[in-house]
Length: 321
Image (cartoon, rainbow, N blue to C red; front, side, top):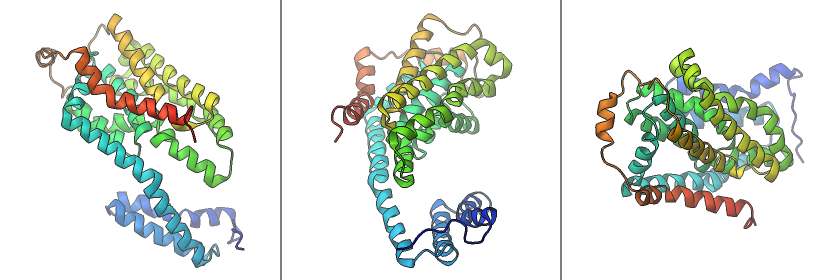
């Protein structure tokens, strides 16, 4: 039986560098060589197979088996999760519900620092938990652009906000996969991640506000941003410690943070309403908001996402096989 050799070149640094060649090429292929994602991935896969067999002594049969196993893992559960998430999103868009979701979020506050937290951080975190794999970044960036954000800034905010949720995306796939591949206990790994990630996760909203509006933004909405981060990160920590399972970590806490921020905005608004230079004026926004949606319409529009949360909650606890 083949035993993996971790230092075939008798130099830990050199062996690690050679092992990283496929990853390095993948990044260079996307950025420097301007290759498509598929081309970069296929070439990186070939490099990984050649390096594994020629330098690390992996049998060709083991390499072929790893490729097959990776393909099947990509189809299930990863591919299935992404497919169903896109399907859910398309249903919401075609039914008109997603526009009501967007309107209900943007109407909470006309201050675009708050809108950025609601969409990029809270709603984006929920979408990351439900779908992952870049889908929430694309959706949230598009939502921010529709509110008047510069496209480049919208993408940047969506990417930075994703830091807090990326580790637990797609119903916890990164953590569960790491536990399986690394042969470690999922509960123990989940608890360890609290110490590694959650303190920084709580500060991400403050960082977002600082990037968007500098010191003034921190002074005016910094405490609200910190509250959102603490609720979000605290909810993640509680679920990780209590359940020892990452499946719900990006589902419930983002919604709690979104609801908490919405409730605060009902009682308080920033004295200075911040608007992006590319965004419509307050007068234009107020004219656009003349069409009001009933509570029933808003509940119906949000219902697919609520149903998804309930099903995942039940499947991860009471109905867990």
